[in-house]
Length: 201
Image 1 (cartoon, helix red, strand yellow):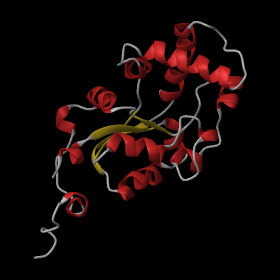
Image 2: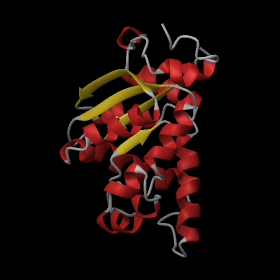
Image 3: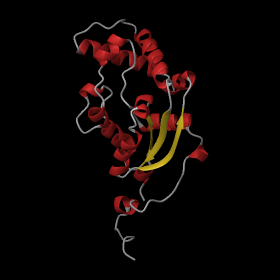
Image 4: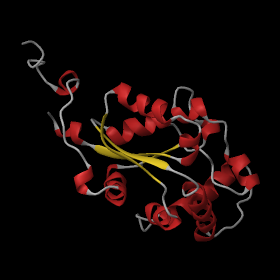
C-alpha cells in the first residue's frame, strides 16, 4: 500500500449537522468514495477548545481577516473594518458561539488525497455558492449575506481540514494517539493493490 493511502484529515459534523440528523448522510459521502474512518467521537466542545482549534496556525487570524476583507470587496460591499485582526475577532467570537452550541461529531478519515477529496465532497465554505452535489451545496441554504445580517457564523454543517499540515495539527487537537485505529478494510485492495493479486483465493 502506498503512502498516499495513509493521508489523514479531520472532519467535524458541526452542531447544525447533528441537529438536522445528517450525520449518517455526511459519513456516507466520505465512505462511498473509498475513504476509511479511523477515529470518531461525539463531544460538546467548550468555547476555549474551539478558539484553540481555529488558532492552531498562528497566521490564521491575519489570513482569515484579509480573506474576509477581500470577499467583501468582491461582493461590492465595504468591510466592517480595514483591520484584519479586528474582523477576525468578530468571526472567532461567532464561531465559538456556534461551535459550542451543542454536540459535534469529530472524525478522522484516511485515504489517498484525503484532505483534497474531503474538501471537494464537502463544498465551498459558503453554502449558497457551493456546487450542487457537494454536502453544503445539497443540504444548506445559508449565505454570507444572511450570516452578516444576523451577526453570526455561517451554518455550513461540516468542518474539513484545509491542508495536510492543518489536518495533522487538528487531529492532535481533537484526538489522542490511542484513539486512532489502524485496521485493514477489504475494499482497500481494490483501491491500492497495484496488481490486484490479493483478490482471488
